[in-house]
Amino acid sequence: MVRPLHIRGAHVWDGRETVKRDLYTNGKRITTAPVNGAQVIDIEGYTIFPGLINAHDHLELNHYPRSKFRERYDNARQWHEDMNVRLNDEPYKSLRAYPLWDKLFIGGLKNLLCGAITVAHHNPPHKDLWRKDFPVRVLKNYGWSHSFYLSTDEEIQRSYKNTPDDWPWFIHLAEGTDEVAAGEYQRLDELGCIDGPKTVLIHCVGMRKQGQEYPGVPYIETDFVAPYVLGAVWCPTTNLYLLGKTLVDEDNRKYTPAVNALGLGSDSRLTGEGDLLSELKAAYECFGNNPNWASYVINLVFWDGGFILFRKSIQDWMFGQKYADMVVIQSTENDAVKLCNSSRADLALVVKGGIPQIGDTELMAKFTNIKTVAATLDGKPKAIHIDLAKRIHANALKEPGLEVEAIPKRKLFTFI
Image (cartoon, rainbow, N blue to C red; front, side):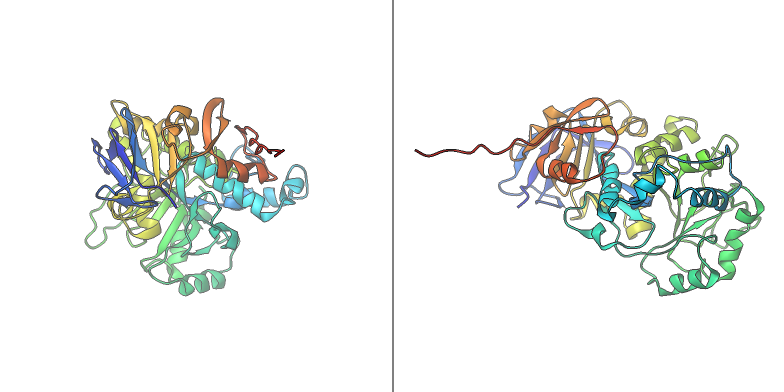
């Protein structure tokens, strides 16, 4: 049973700004009024954001080292070919041999530690992703194809047609800077996989201006125009690492992609820098570290991520009887800028379903009904929920930068 909470004194992000207000949960979900028996938690000086939404990850690949084998690639196909011939070399051979659950768990833990409580997995829907003890929520209703270089046209069409219109359908597209990448949007359109309300395009670095106006859509000078798809997902650190280019850069940072919604994804650690907070920071840097863009950037993981995965806004997610998933930071003059520049160790508290999972020791201590274990995250002292600590200790793979103390054994009493 999850104890209801009445959180007082904090500022709360409402999609535009932070406002000081009380926040209530009735257990695992946000509610609009206090609940009898709620534990009152005073957190003056802190700001609460919804749990971040990671719109693209390959959850079973996050135990691998970041890898590339040439300075720049023209197309992700080249990277995949380089990677594929090394799978039986070390360290990849040994890392491939770990059980699937251990690999998936590390992917989930990576996201939880950075406050990304909801994740879209771009790979087969492994049933372990929806176990009750998995660290984060994983989108369950989705369709996907990997890409034009790993799927045939027939496979892509079949996957698209078999995905219900109210589910998102994901595909890597235009992940490159060459002519092959530039032509993939038209190729997908010719397959009939663009004009529905469900298509979500991943990466899109190679897409270029369409050179025309669309009915009801004002022409925007940008390198990326795709008004008929559900959305696109931007993975800046992967793109810059492999391709040296991403959707928004020095040449076009004053523009935003003309698309219904632009989510942010961490990709896996095979190519991404770290986690979703790394992507937030990189995205903010792509917009010149301009505070005027900070709210836009963080809403990529709130408004836009929620719309792509669930077609719901931040209000629906945070204040409409949805899960009480929260990320807490110390308040500043500009909380949006602070979040854009935060690392996972900077997060004061991460809450999933009304239950604190990890946080600064003094903040976790306020939740008196929660048993915790001491931990260190990237050199900073933390307290971690004992149930999560047990799962971490039981996993064969270890999360870099995280040290969790041993769980005290129960004392045995001898009766005379």
